[in-house]
Image (cartoon, rainbow, N blue to C red; front, side, top):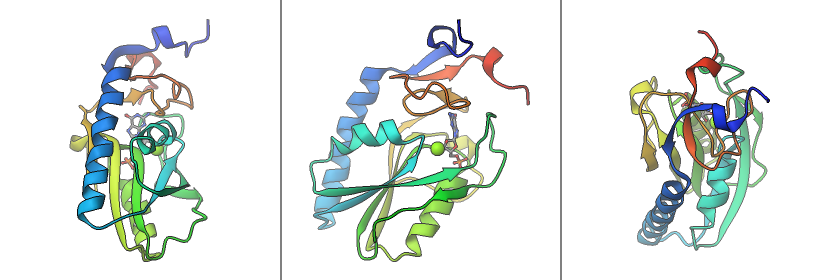
Length: 188
Ligand code: 5GP
Ligand code: MG
């Protein structure tokens, strides 16, 4: 059996598939309410791939507003459980976001370096507004000043996989979020 088979990879399921879907419904409502109260009638969603692909696909279907979607690709993690390099833009966006209302999506807010870097980069393109939504927030790991406007779940300081989040590019297809079994994590 492949070492990365799902059944023996997780030490614990942290957030179930149904809890994720329930929370995304309410997050969608929070984003709609905020947009209405701010007079925003169209959003430009920027998704940080690859990690946010699954989160983005499910969340945007809970946002009943006209929206455009674009992706930005950043790399900072290699096959390790901790950041080994500073965030680097690999593919940037194609939409013109000047004067647009941006909703920036990432899977997880950890040290904050990735979102800080992408937020600064997008702000330099003069959007009308920029809000950040993350599925997961590991507050105790923060190294730079960065908070999200919308947070799905606050989680403890554990390396998680599933629902878009990978380890060595595996596990993105798990429908839930789980803690990667210790014996599969690389020795630090
Ligand atoms: P930050 O720049 O905030 O430290 O990290 C953000 C990125 O690191 C996320 O988009 C994600 O790709 C990766 N990351 C941080 N924590 C985890 C984790 O627990 N599991 C996985 N799979 N990726 C993580
Ligand atoms: Mg990521």
